Every structure is written in C-alpha cells, then in structure tokens.
Image (cartoon, rainbow over all chains, first blue to last red; front, top):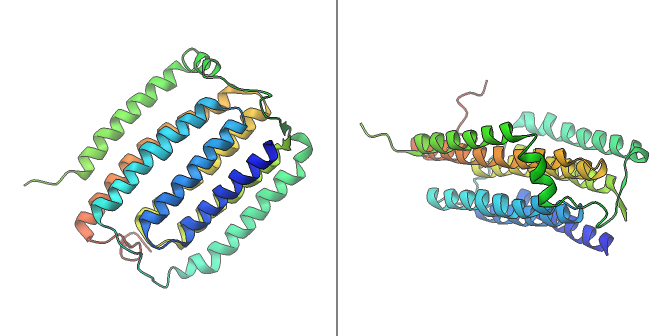
Length: 165
Length: 100
C-alpha cells in the first residue's frame, strides 16, 4: 500500500517536473508545478507530516501558484521565444548538473545503512506536537517571520506600483 | 515499508530538474518557477530527515522555508512586473544588463 502510493505520487511528481521543463507556455508550466506540489503534499502525509501536507496545499499550491498564474495572465505572457540559449550553460551547466545528481545519489546510497525506513503511521507529527515547539521554543523566530511577511507585502506593493510623476 | 533513501533520491532528482529548468528556460517566470521547484525538493528531504530522526524541529524548518518562499514569491513577482513595465519583455536573453 505504502509502496504503491509512494511510487504513484513520486511518478506524478517527476512527470510534472519533466512537463515543467518541456512546456513552452508559462501557464502550462505553472499548472504542472501545481501537480508537483500536490503530489509532494501526499508524500508529506506518507512521512507523517500532516500539518505540512495541508500547508503545502494551502500555501504553495494555493497562494503562491495563484500569484504566479495571476502575474502570467496580467502580463499576457505568450509562448516562450526559442533562442539559442547560453553557450556556458550548454558546455558547463548540463555536465555539472549530471555530475551533481550522480554525486548526491552516490552519497545517499553509500550512507543507506545509516538511514532508517519509512513505515506508514509509525511516527505521526500532529499539529499539536508541532505547535507546542513552534509557540514555546521558537516563538521569536515565528514572530520575526510575520514581520518578514509584512515587509515583503510592503516591498511588493512598492515595486509593482506605477511611478506617478 | 520503504527505505528513506528513496525519498531522498526523489528529492535529489526533483532538485536537479529544477536546476536544469533554471538553465534551459528562457522566460523569466518559468525560471522563477524552477526556483520554487528546487525549494520544494529541498523541503522533501527536510521532511524525510525529520521523520528519520523523529525531530519535530525539522518540520518547523520546512514551515519557515514555506514562509520565506511566500515572501520571496511576492517580491520576485513584483520585480518581474517592474521589469516587464520598463523592458516590455520577459525573455532572459534580453534582460542581460548585468551579464559580463
């Protein structure tokens, strides 16, 4: 059951990410990113992170992606122009990316004995557990994030506003 | 029951696809979406390690990453709107003033 759910949603996430790379129109890319984020939410549930799964849906797939699609529609962004692209990216970027992936994969596989196993329902972090830590030990960082969000809102309004002179 | 390393490998592959998208994509908005994909991939490995070590603080770290990503998306998209207003384009090949 766990294996089937993991394989299905990992495949959906990978297919969505591949579609993001292949699509030429930004709105299609945005929709495939929503697919990736939603399937990641299911994987969070399999890992016992119930609050994060819901937050992933609400914050990422909901708020952030709505902002993206809103800006794409506002700017009326059409199909991506096909250009030759950067030569440095072709010569150095893609080999470096491949080497990077191989490096991470080999590190993970070589340290597999130190890593545990995921058993569904074995350790579920409830919202209660999470809030006990968040609102006691980490209250100051939490409050600072709210100031950060406020500054981000003000900055976004100041940047996107039309200059009136 | 499946090993945690599978989740970590998935996270690594998604991150690499985000990096590849950052290099391939020619539209500023899709480049920005690739960054969001990378953030999501890293979040998955955070949650996996939090589950592995029964550490609640690992999940709280993901919560903070989400909040910072929300702030980053708001400011970044405002910058994209400002760039479009002055340049009338979102093609990264034409926004190359800081390219050396």
